[in-house]
Image (cartoon, rainbow, N blue to C red):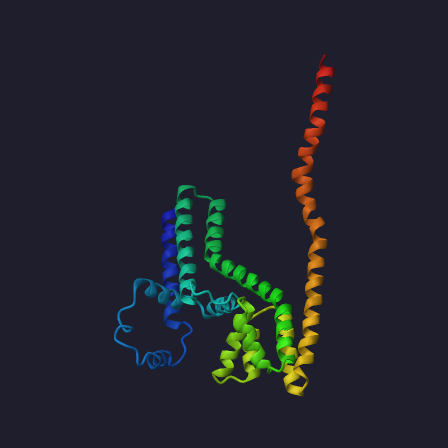
Length: 293
């Protein structure tokens, strides 16, 4: 069978699967009614026809499984939900990259048919589809590392504020207003959740879901336990701050101890051969000239 016929069969099968998913996909009961209720009160300008970009984002979200969307939404929460990359736009980018890479891979396969070409095209398509996930995962990892680094100093500030007479929520609000990093933004978001009616434990649980830093999770658990059993907040903050400073120092020492191991490979592969050539090269040339005579 020719590659063109295989490509046509693959395209038809993909279209049938997408059509079945759009008809029998994960649809919540009353979803359209909920959307209509939420859209009530909008002005006429907001109800105008959607741009093509928004149509593409909506169509991409419809043809993407719910589990993938929920996982991507969790990674977006860990990354701080960048304003330039909302969930629908990210899903649309995944599909556009995957389809574009698949089309280019099919053209490459038609030009040079073979098993290796097909595997290479499939690999490139899969990688292109998951490139947005990798970027968001990297952004989330950097953000969680920044939260871990900021936590000891932030706890010191909160300890000073609580010992000066402020309540825990007021100290958190002061720290969030004065701070500029992701940890300060999480504190502000938590306080806003409590102002909107969430209980303190629910707001802290939501902050745990938006972060993956182990130190912050441990701190939140200590605060919840202190609030539950009536333990002094200042003592908990002081203990947590000293523990976080100790862990930060230990992490710095651990990274310093890893430097010789990381430097060994480039030293042996890149530096030592050049050094040997520079030192032993002239001697080797002289020996060869002497033996040649």
